[in-house]
Length: 131
Image (cartoon, rainbow, N blue to C red; front, side, top):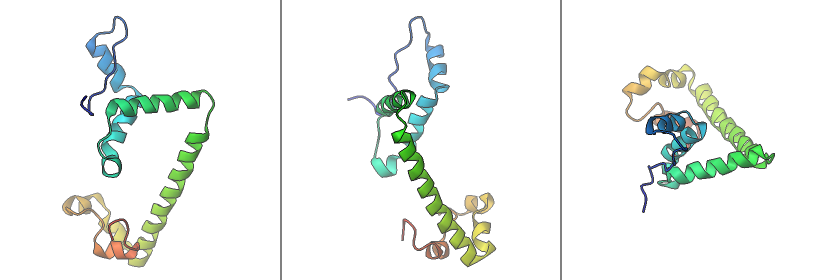
């Protein structure tokens, strides 16, 4: 079994290790796959970095071939999700006045180990994900 955090990318002919690492570091695909593996753990568990990279590469190939259906669906889903978040935060800010926005300031969040959202904020946005 391979390590899920290992990205298996063979070097191009004549490419040394430093060049390979630079290619990977500057690749939008590799960075996207890395972010997906890090930020999707709570929803999907541990994802393999190489598998995410391969899937992302396949998706890019499809888009480059003219198939925009998947990216259009993703953009619609993101727009709806962001609208829901915006609406909930706007409602919380309206109900609480400036206090909610004040608690979201970086200096307040840094001093609050539970994040910017406290019990009063959760009630204002209808319980949120954590009730």
